[in-house]
Length: 302
Image 1 (cartoon, rainbow, N blue to C red):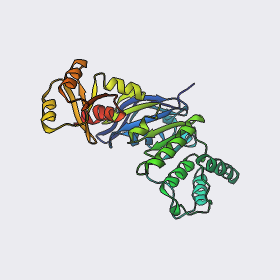
Image 2: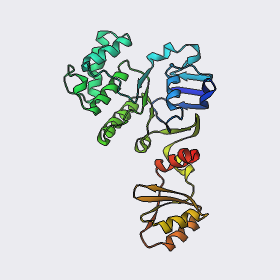
Image 3: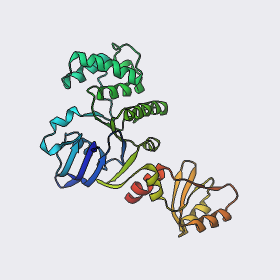
Image 4: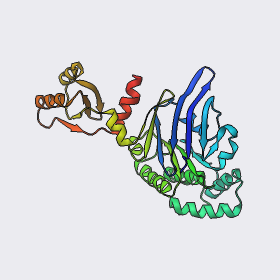
């Protein structure tokens, strides 16, 4: 089975600034592929190139089997895109928004009516199609924006921070739709700043300063980023924090809500720390993707 997306040595420059620096990766059909990195890492620039909106400075890009160097227009019927900003028009009704999107794709009225029925069922939309978009809650607007991106039945859907700024319950419902979408065979390429969402991706590419610094499953990323023990401190006064910062066995100490996360050099260092602290004040934990992100992305930048 051929990859849905193939990127080989992609570089994108704007004058003397290199936004994307020699990256290579592939995405399989039906995969939920996470694209993570801090703001300015090059994620959106890469996505714009995959959509055919930007020409590579060098390297090759294939999307849905089409080589973008031979013309980007053909790929537009194969991809759907939903940006981090709400992409429907508030002063139009639901049906008017979908009709406008269908017109851009040159869809027939018959195809629009069929897809509208299918997509309303897919997202569970039960309100009248004559409802003005401005009268809908934010979560339902996001789901309708996803429906608009799926209107022309694309093979690959690019979601650029689709749940930014919405409530946790809405994010859960939206990700249930993403999993349903991937289950139907669609390829989902998603960026997010929420690490609990990234946990649900099949594989994750971590970008920093235009380069991919890691590309693995969530579990593989955790194992590679933290081969040593990771400890959560329930309570830590300034004396303890000062001692740990000066300890060569302490490889990283950072706040985590009301607690502290501490990476240690080896098992012996963990045993010595545990014996030196009151019972229950420290515990061994598995790393989260947030820990991985801080160590591999933010840690390197600092």
